[in-house]
Image (cartoon, rainbow over all chains, first blue to last red):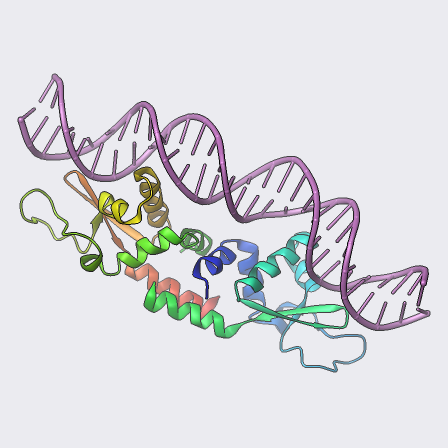
Length: 104
Length: 104
DNA sequence: TTGACATTTCGAAAATTATAGATATAAGAA
DNA sequence: TTCTTATATCTATAATTTTCGAAATGTCAA
């Protein structure tokens, strides 16, 4: 857990929003899933274009943001067919909260 | 509580160290206090030059860091005689930890 | 294999942050 | 008042981050 990297990832309003939106993916994004039905469990993961549509910035910016959040460990991604689904890494987020509470 | 501002303040190794050192000011810094004895309770506050000596960066950089941490609400300062004593704002730090745990 | 998306990566310009030396201010001591 | 010490602010440069459009890559469908 690299605290500086996590703090940098959190120091941007849009990235913070993405994390918050992904806390309630079914409320905040349209239904996800490939062509016909949903063969796999996406575990609340949301594809890049849905996030881009909601965030408003350019696709390359959002893709970059998602990489920053993933590199910090706050998000994980899973690719299915053409789409990359991003979801929160709740374990690391709670670990980080504990760090702030006890070690910071 | 401005989350982005707090995150920015935390996204630097030296600033993070300052916060950690101030968690145990009596272990990490030489005795503080004015000329003769200690007329006021410094509440664990540490003067800028002590922090500068430990951190190693220039005085202006450290003074700037302390301002950034204070503006984010993570530190508070109190001036006595020639010295400005900085100490942690435990309330805000715990509030921030709770935010990460519950809202982020 | 070509075409049509979805996403990532690249390259560049603009904005912000980092850092320190020089200067200014504040407060006691001589 | 003047000197010394502590801290803050100003100014400038280097480094990093932001942000986007363009180009590249990956994946399926025709």
